[in-house]
Image (tube, rainbow, N blue to C red):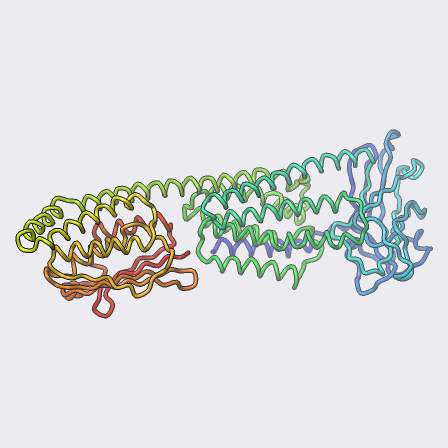
Length: 587
């Protein structure tokens, strides 16, 4: 937990430092002989409408540049934006320089050095005569406009319809062929990553349905599905050509993905690695997201601060999983580093202005997903190994129990009882023989099964009580106080409890009773078996911790773990002078 707190503290410090890292350069340079793309995001802003502003220098009025989507929203109407660009070098004759406007609402006109070069929709003086344009607008510049030197780009827009600006709104300066090549390469990459995420969704769903329905697989599948949707919507927003009024809906879908994805990621980690305090971690994650999405949103950072904080929080959880030697934890931690790397580089670049090459998340998604899937496979392998060990242990205990049931001592005492009864009470001897045969027949039928109907187990208990009653010259009774219909349980667990009770609680010739209860409570099933007996007085003087478990209870624990895998609890002790064994199973 200390690592997580330090990570959050570091993020806050970096965020505060970022406030002093704004680029205040007055103009943007574009090298005409290169294939670069310049995305102009910072603009001088004026509210109102004046045709003479196409030629005026906004720097004398606005003083400070702002993001084109971050103007004052208390006024709806006509807004003007202006920026300066310096063209360097010599134009390439075979290429056409373009201005591409992305995600700018609602209708606007674009001016180059005071000359109107493009109109998207119709800028209006009120809501009625305003006509929304397209989300993206491409303008080809004439050769005579692209002479080396300083140029002004001005944008006159209206937003009477209240259309929100998209945070990705910007103006891109580039050659047309260079832009088209970048778009093609980018789309191929994004389609590939979307396909990888969708394949992971199918794999996660298959693991969930065929691998014991572990909830962590379902959460990871939902996380990958949201990621695939986020990439798809981002591609549509950045490259699609549609009415600007549709942008709000697409942006809403993207924000929903951003809101839920980090929460699902943390949920997957806490369930996959069975970390303590699940609700605690999920609650912290949800509070961080809600705070930075609905209460306070830091302006001008260029990244989602809440997502970054949660990524570091998840990194701390994985560090804890590694320290606790959780299977697959180290591999998942390596995957988390791939996911964090571009965020860390972008944060360093923002704060310290170190010129790193542009890193895209797509290139890091594939190794990230590979590591997480490998971590899941390692944990499945470890779980299968544990199950095989438990199964082998269960088989060994089953063999030991069967050996104990038919051991020479048991058979000798039973045969001696039969011989004794033949002379004294032949009818009772026949009943003893029939009871012995019935018990062996039932044991032979169910001993190899993983689970049997509860009623079959109770019938076995009655048969064993009948057999031992003939042997011990007593009467034993099984009283069913309440039962659960159609429930299945591991075989011979209650028969083992009955056998232990007969051995340790009753003298020869002493009658006895066993009480069985099965109840459902919410998502749990509670089984209880109680018995009386005069020998319990001697056992009651011992501490429960000092009572040594024999082979019978070891068999019971192995069988429960084999069937319910950590979803069960076993407790035994004295309850109002009776010996009681309770088993709780979470469904």
